Image 1 (cartoon, one colour):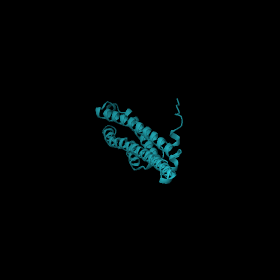
Image 2 (cartoon, helix red, strand yellow):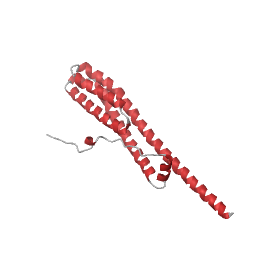
Image 3 (cartoon, helix red, strand yellow):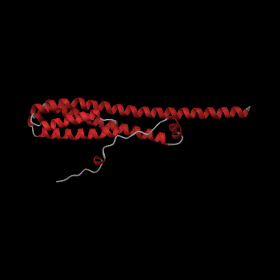
Image 4 (spheres, helix red, strand yellow):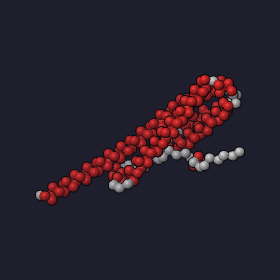
Length: 183
């Protein structure tokens, strides 16, 4: 009788441990999903600012059509990108197009002096900072989650219940190298 009670107690403790580990993995997965959603929120904000910025520049620099079209095309590709790797590549292309747009703005003193343009540029800069923070938070959440599903004993529960590793939000390979400065 005592042996049966001991076996039941051990099984109950093991069951509680498995439930606890499973719940921790679910919380980790949900944190990663939430962090990804926060990136989407900030990117949507960025996408909403870009048409206003383009329209403001159009008024001053209508003949810079190629640059404006490149920004619009990059925005469209970024909106349609899927997954961390695809989204990172599209966002880097959009950032490059925006840099070209701001370079065009340098050639137009009236545009640079425009309150509307300055305000949009500040909004975009603040949004870029929020995006950078959201990416960092997402990658931190992915690190915590991936560590949880790959360490003992959680890896056993993760394997049995279908938890899989998540992908980091990384810049493409050429973007990760040292910055080249040439004079």
